[in-house]
Length: 209
Ligand code: AMP
Image: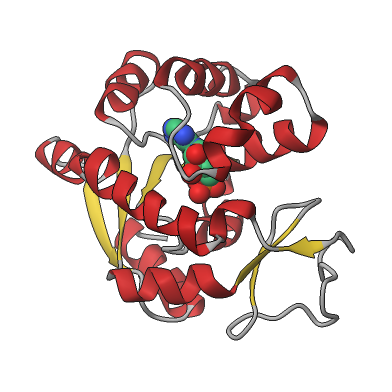
């Protein structure tokens, strides 16, 4: 199954995706995670995108589209994928349509207050990318990932200045994708406010798992 997870930063896309891979049996592809890995590795891509990402802006469409096209050409995506954080602009969605046919787009519906609460407390594993929260989903040992032992840190772009920018960018550039996909008849709205287990149940119900 070919799925897109669409929604503002902090809506819980990555958290649900980590659970959904076992339900759907397809890989989770997060463009943000790919960029963060490139930054950590100080690769050419990482050096190019670091300042843009830290400021809460979007990486240019050409770079991002090329990255996803290459990733979707890999064998593990044959049965499908969960795209988390891509597309984020109409040109990205149009480009994607040229190399893959998306079956469903899950729209994570959450007010700004929910986004700010989640991003303010979000912590991420530097090694495996697992998302924690200082109130709702704490690591057992502070600063240490329960899954891989990696360091749990605050993303630079989860700092308040960058969060405001990311929300602005979401409204201006990404939210138009809701109508774009609704018109194509592939959009499924999901209430992203409840705790993750409830969202998993709703996700399974709406996709028939
Ligand atoms: P995320 O982990 O999805 O919140 O992404 C973190 C950051 O990576 C975003 O704020 C953007 O700077 C960049 N990014 C991720 N996905 C995309 C995309 N599809 N287009 C442009 N920039 C992206």
